[in-house]
Length: 327
Image 1: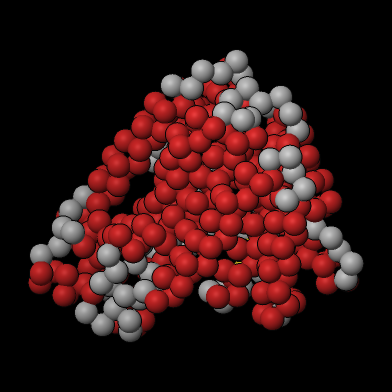
Image 2 (image 1 turned 30 degrees about the vertical axis):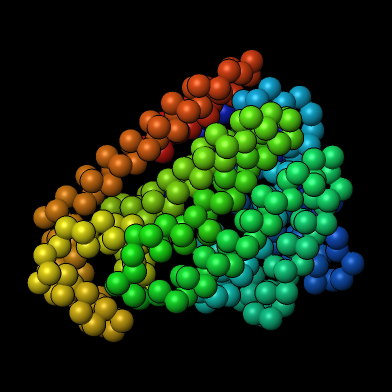
């Protein structure tokens, strides 16, 4: 249930953008060892949608950008994202990624972690060579720092039904939203329109949070066919995600105890699936989150509408894509 720009823009245009990004990724990742060649091939052929570089491209056009530095910035963003996925799959012991074996399945955990670190170093090394590199550096280092912080917070709160909404928000900002914010904020930096920096950072942060909340929503309220995987996977793992956090606010003290007692015991927790479905229906959590998502999309659209741009086609494509995010 990810955002798919290619459903909205000309396929030829989409392919050209992706090819430019992939070519740049290929040039940024130096492969002087056989392992790095394997790593590079895996990253480029992984089947990722390149959503973050696309976001950067569109927001650069929103500010009337005519140059080519967006390719470098978008590629660096994608490399950091790829590194985070390598680390995630090891930490979560995930066997697949996008329907294919995860990298560590073939290459092992140690080499995969080091490979992720190597990708990060390649991205930052290339960043310093860019005309806007010095000004872009704080945003990218913030992303890497917050990724690590979010992972630690998530590990510390795994299967913890007492996790607060504040901690959950820190996790999704660090794991997802900060990189989106970096991509939109970077558009204001490479165009020299620093007066838009705060606005664009805020839009990216909202978009990233929206993506994660949608993913959390679909895990409970979508079919396997639409989701591309079995629903309730977060519940089966014991993760406390957005729907559960919203539900906790509605439950009575007794209901809260009934649902979350022995939450860390996988067998007992999974046996309460029907009870969870009953509570979701009783308190209309699905409808509550849908309204919230629609409201947030509308707020983002309003902010984008306020930006004057000569690239009206790209601006409209952003707005149309946001419409598609409604659930």
